[in-house]
Length: 329
Image (tube, rainbow, N blue to C red; front, side, top):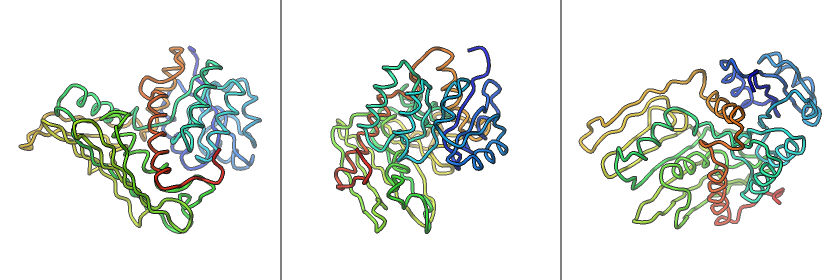
């Protein structure tokens, strides 16, 4: 494709607005169509972010032959059905994280994408950002030696009425917040821990309020991860290697714009500044479009099997707690 790539959005909520803001700086992308459950909401979103067309239903937008790729920004509980609709309509897809509520749904969609020869990617925005890619490069090059341990947490401010308290929307801490520490640890230590230990505290809203996860690897290596619905935000990550360490506390680790690696005398081993072009969401759009222009069906930065592996770990954590959503198939 030499022309601009025309994007269609499914869902006109807050995260769709963030993504549209990020894409606003990309000259090779066109904010073409927005589909919402009501035409009024779609038209308001289109006006605010500069979309060419607005639709009052997802099916209507999917009939538009000018849409090159669909960004699915609906609630997690709807990802499976929405992505399936896109594939049935022959559309490439970038779907918000987590991809689906469980690995079985994800595997079905991955197989469908491959069968129909369509591009499919989870919108794991962190994995496309400069700082994350630099840390991964440092780890793979041995800058801090062999990674022995990771400690990462994500607690969010969740007051009365917060969407994460809604069982019917696949609420809870694990899928929305725990995804980040688990994804990060897997990217740095491997996607197949030898053992997964987890503890979950369920709340009165029938979703998980607090989760603690330990991923155990060979040679005593481990990742200690946690997430929860709290009265304040608390987000940090610490990576310990045999030659040094990396700590991200000044910024949220999943959207950091700078990072420094230190040895055990606190001498700087390396430092990196990776500012956003806009708000950080633009990098996943760039990756998706580069893949489309290259004819790739999945992203080398966000491989589908890595996405699936993270979902399997999250599945295990929920199985350990006996936690399933009413709508799961």
